[in-house]
Image (cartoon, rainbow, N blue to C red):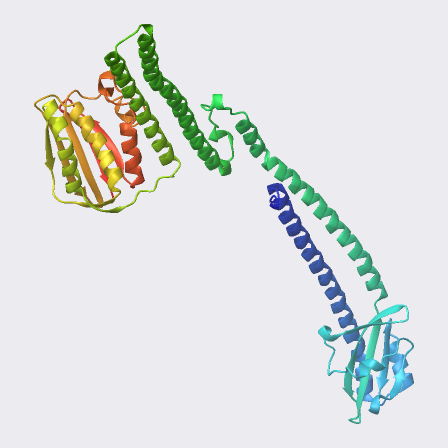
Amino acid sequence: MLERSKAPASLARRVMLLVGLSIILCLGLLGWVIQQAIEQHFADMDGNELTNAAQPLAMALQNQPPDAAHLDRTLRGLKGISFTVFGPADKVLYRTPGPDLHFLAAQARAQIDHRHLARFSQGDHSYRGAALIIEGSQGQPYKLALAMNIDIHQHFLTHFGKALWGIMALAALITILAARLAVRWGHAPLRRLSADIRAIRSDRLSNRLDPRQVPAELAELVAAFNDMLGRLEDLFERLSNFSADIAHELRTPITNLSTQTQVALGKARSAEEYKEILYSNLEEFERLAKMVTDMLWLAQTDNGNITPALVPLALAEEVKGLCDYFELLAEDKGVRLVLEGGPLTVQADRHLLRRALSNIISNAIRHTPAGQAVTIRLHAEGKRHWVEVCNPGSPIAPEHLPHLFERFYRVDPARGQGGVGLGLAIVKSIARLHGGDVTVSSTPQRTCFSLSLP
């Protein structure tokens, strides 16, 4: 059982997903940067306060041994600062009321570094602290651990964070909604374009989309669609003409067969007369069979069902063989065949090449006045090899030249005698199967068909 392939996400959904993620990431990053900057600002303020508080305490310890009365007098100018003085082996020499600062003694440094302030909580309060190593008045080392209460800062940061992320969420929502409206507004030309395309029917293929009415990004798409529409219109027109041509071409032999049969049945006839009627009907059947065969071959060519068997061929020898084949027909018409050009080698399907050249040469013989010559010239230009078949006679009007290779197209009934109007169409199909082409030119002096092969 075949699995149904999952349809790709819509353009609007893709754009909104990308825009939404980008907005959320950008606003999230901005909020984080703002919050970190404010926290760092408070940390710097706290570090400055701790440094300012440590200076008088350090001077007091450097001038005399720790004395409670002296340190109490020093504390009068310090508000909100708790500290502990540690002696040898981290023995507490002096301690103010407040948090336990024993753990800071192990982190003591020569000076307070704002980047290494300790942040901790005890009970229901939050603190930021640091520890200094101080050399006493008699050279003995002391450790001074300080801490300050930062509950106010934390309270501010908590409320500020909630407000900040609320604002960021609201801004993201508003921005995404605005982006959604912008995407919908931006896709409006696509919806109008789809409506215009849906309005085109098989009887309105002459309609074209106006590239001036769409944004620049869609102009190329509209131009490509108009080009495709032009090809479809041409194909529909050719199909309609082809159907009419088929009906016209089949009507004539069928009418002839019907008429001859009715005449034959009108009265009793001799065996010889019936034989002549049957021969006449056989000619019509053969004409019908050839038409159907040619039409089937052209259909197979259009569908890519025919692949030429390419082999190296001596072009001059192939053309000379065809000249020998048509020699009797040319003599009956009083026409000479003249071959010009040196030896050329082409990669071609021998059967198809002979069929194409036969159609061109027989057509030239048929329209060459008696006493004149059909000239077949072989030459090479770059990587192309050319076979030109030229014959004198009545010129073909310029308006007919572009249509000569269309199926069932005839300039006039006289030029269509002996065929059904598919010969030149077959020539063009064979040329294209080989990667070549066929062209025609006509002047008052002569008409030339040129077949090019790689």
